[in-house]
Image 1 (tube, rainbow, N blue to C red):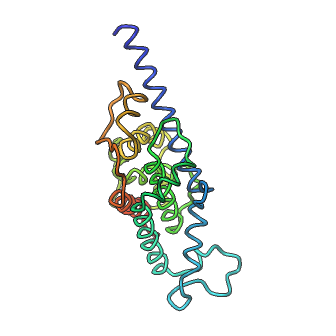
Image 2: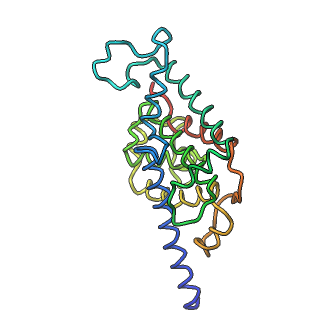
Image 3: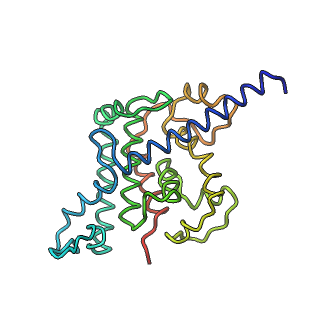
Length: 242
């Protein structure tokens, strides 16, 4: 291997690390605080819970300061999750809306505005589903699951991909028990999973020269189909507590 090839490989590795950190930081920012006019996942989920009729499992007047998530029935939670997915799918179909959101997203790669907007919408959806199902979205293990689901990948499949045997269903306790070394291994791959969904061929060539990309690269047109897939991945990655 000559010096030029080595230098290109090192540049590619550096680019991959920067890309992973950038995507993950953006997703954490979206889910926790929101971006521009888009509120964070918890605020978004709680706002939808306020609209649940108390007679159908919604919050009661005697809340004792509890989050609405802890006051409503499991059935109401599932209805709200389904509603959030439908709303996100509708937003992903509105190209003008997504283009406007893209203007508030700063990334080290140049993503078309509609794709950056779709990333924001999908990340918030996944964070909201995880929160509603009782998960702590500030936990690094959960954040990895949120990032994976935003790429339409389940945490279970990602764990199997790095050689971890898992049961048919993950739980909050099982997710917390995943060794941090495994989480780091998954995190080294997750940026390119996202790039394959939201990136462009040009950004792949510029940022990841010499690094294999798993899956096809979407040049344009991240739309309602991907958001529906993201919703399913989120529901599978963060099952309801039993």
